[in-house]
Structures are given as structure tokens and as C-alpha cells.
Amino acid sequence: METGFRNNSAFGDGIIEADDIIAYEIFELGNTDILKYVLENYKPQNSDDMFLITDIKSYIKELEENGCVDDLYLSEKTAFAKKIAEYVGRQSGIDVKYALWLCDSKDDVLENYGCEWDTEDDISEYPKTSAIFSYLGSEGGLYGYNVDPYTLEVEKSAEREA
Image (cartoon, rainbow, N blue to C red; front, side):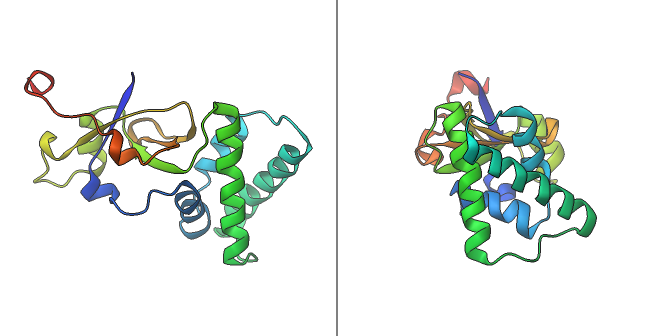
């Protein structure tokens, strides 16, 4: 099982619903990484998927030109994020409901998101899934889950920490 790492004090330990995270990343932060990753790594399977791909391309263009997508109601943003989660879920075989940002190593967490007082003991480990929404190298990736991922935390043991 491949695992990833996060510092919940840096990433937060509140919102883990996939559609909320996706909507926040795209429409509040103006990030295009999820849209670009989905576009590049998943292939449309039907006409509904083609409509989604058209929307993805349109939002990437709008975000890159304007820095935001400002002509959507909150309900439309949430519905679009849900479509992204369902699309990735169908193609990965996971009924995605939740998501977590994870880094590949504890060092990546400390280097990119740690505070000067953080140690490896502050970092939690979780299994990665095949439902990947974004991957930013050492800055981590967004992984989808069908169960609350906090229940999947890998327990720390004396052997693992040694």
C-alpha cells in the first residue's frame, strides 16, 4: 500500500468532502491544477463526460485570463465540483465522497508546509488511492476516498518510527 503524509495543523482537519475541496480550490483560490490534471489524466467515456471536458477547458481559460470564474452561483460551483468528483471516481473505481491533500514524504510536508517547530511526530500517514485529482510533486496531491479518510490513518509504531 502506497501512503502519503500530511500535517493536519497545516492542511486543516475540518472539511474533507471532495466536492467542497474541489470547489474551494477552483472557485475561491483560482487554482487550475485540478482542472488540468483531470483533463490530462482521464479520458471522456460518454457525451456527458464531453460536456464536462468542455466546461473544464472553459474554466481553465477563464481562470488563466481573469484569475477567477465570476459568473456562477454557489450551487453551480458545487454541482460542477461534484461532477469532477464523480468523473474521477468512475474512472478510478472509487465512489469518491472525501478527499485529502497528501505529500509523498514527511520531508516534503516539513519543507513545504511545516512550521519551524513542527517535527515528524506532527505528521500523519494515510493510504493513497487511485482517485487522484491533482499532483503537484513535492507539494503533494489530492486523493479521493469513499470513506472518511481520517479513519484510515496509519498507526504510528515504534518499528515505523525507528
